[in-house]
Length: 340
Ligand code: G4F
Image (cartoon, rainbow, N blue to C red; front, side):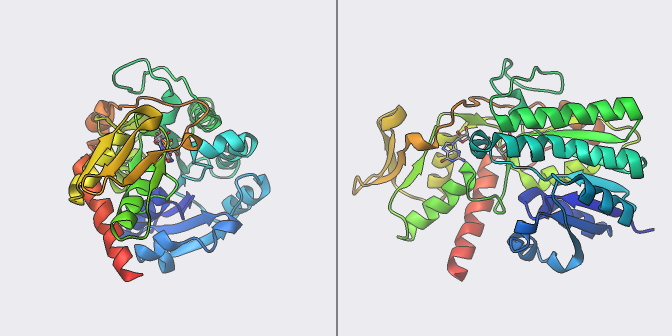
């Protein structure tokens, strides 16, 4: 029998990769999207799966719309990937972020409890919940210390998922994913902003790229592999929480260095902190500058995940390293640059 899965946030990076995987596995995929996201399915088109998904409009702020969907379909699996997911925006829209990223999780869990208690539920939790970290590596037991309305909302979603698992015996799993990037990443996130920015500079379409705090460290993996881990979490007998990460951490500056190397650009860093600049070695023209406006009111300085548990129980391991990720992202950036 064909399984039916609901993916909220289907037009996002993770939604697209997960949908691709489930379609390959012969699932019927119901993709929930916000009314405003209707036009925004370039990722699904790029993966050539936009015609293979049944789309349903859904606002996570509307309990009735969620309930309607659960009355219409019998879902074997429900993946909640929808969120206001940009950390910087959450400082300007804390109420909306809390309503969608936090309370949205509860609305889905309530619908599952009421209409479909046998559906398996996946919550996309985030390494942002660790915030200002205490340990060298963060695992499922590490202390949370969130630093933004986004991270606090994700923490609510994480705890309510655990609570519904325990209180109502639902199959509710939570995947604490560290940063995961790809050519399908939104341009507002730093990795894609850098790959797109540097390629645009090389092609003469942009003079200078402006960034915020390039000294922050992140554990960056390849999003397609993380979608695989999400699916694996719902194939166990018992629901649990798992970290998805590479175990390596790099500064944004390191990421830029890797890009510049791959693009064979002759550059050099000059100055430090707010005065830091990446310049063309020959012409001495600025290529990257720091702009205070991209700094956040509270920053997460260091993230590095420990996926021992996922490795042992799920047999999941991140395969793509930073160099591989940079290659993947820049190659596709170049390809679509040529096609414009
Ligand atoms: O790429 P970012 O915006 O990702 P961030 O904040 O780490 O969050 C991402 O990963 C989380 C998982 O840990 C997800 F939950 C979340 O939804 C999202 O996908 O920023 C990464 C770092 C930050 O320290 C930021 O301050 O890059 C720094 N940064 C420096 N300049 C910049 C910029 N970030 C952005 N977006 N733009 C800049 O110009």
